[in-house]
Figure 1 (cartoon, helix red, strand yellow):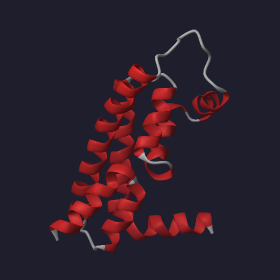
Figure 2 (cartoon, rainbow, N blue to C red):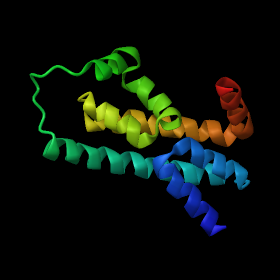
Figure 3 (cartoon, rainbow, N blue to C red):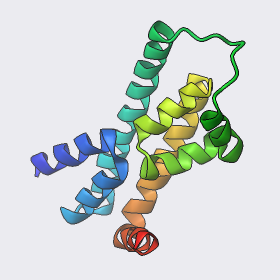
Length: 142
């Protein structure tokens, strides 16, 4: 059983929705899902926020006078950080959503606050509604 926990935890670091499906497939209980997905998502958010911020600061020295490219402007105008944090864990991945937020120049504290909120929201949704959530996703994409 520890191997299953470790696998779901490891996958949740990079692709949260796939980890939720694995947990469901392994028959995790509500509390097992909450702990494993929540812990993996939390560590992912902290790790990638600080690592990506370091990379951006060291490798891509920002010029604050430059305007953002059109892609990031569209994301910022359409969804903002709250939308990105709520959709990111399931549609992109936590690292992808964090990279976009940092590219938009959003502070680490705001990213942490909103991304952790998104992770915890989706952890609850997957733990409570499990199969129904995946059936809904499947019906939307097919």
